[in-house]
Length: 281
Image (cartoon, rainbow, N blue to C red; front, side, top):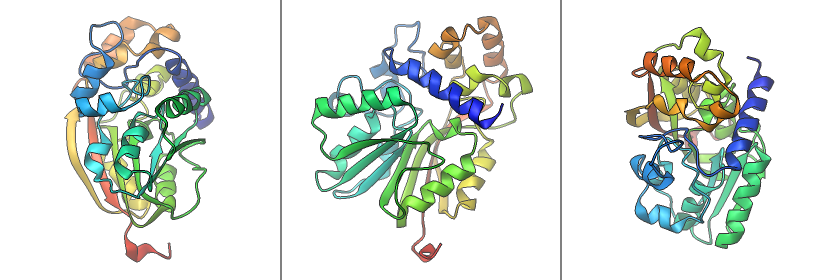
């Protein structure tokens, strides 16, 4: 698949998700076609009842594979950038931590998601949060302004992850932190899965091998790159992803994929630092 084809398919898939209630990029049990609610799914991946209560209604679409805010150690007055901010859930949680002296910028390439996020910001009265249209490979943000960059199950969707981490390094201040939750592979995927747009939208076929993902972060200039948490990804959730229904994909094929890949895909939480010594880079 060509990069532009991938981006268009991902954009179209998540535009549809923005128009429905909930989604299934990651959960312990699928929110599509089951009794699980988005709130239950979110608790399973690390969000607290307080988190769910304090975000505007409609901000949490159940799209994540972890809770980067819980591990980010945000401080009052900091500037936070969220790569692939969706309907704004993590941005609103971050805004609570950094306070009115802080600033949160969400970047997303899907206009429908941005519309939803901005509506949620207005509903919740979030004056310290803004949302910008843009690709995470080319951030619409100036150099050296962020104290921390977060992302939740989004970088795996990019066809150019090296560029994403280079951009993250660029916009971070020296001494700034990276804290991401994402999907990686323990072994290569079969070719027919790698070629599947539905598997891509479902956060699977675009994922890198774990060692390659970490190498891309280091190659961008980050130091102290660490995996601080890792769990198996329940691949059966891909079968119920709403995009699969929208694209009329053969469900038997997806079930076969899920069986084959059940122990090959993990969700990781990764932290890294832009060293102060790299000020001139």
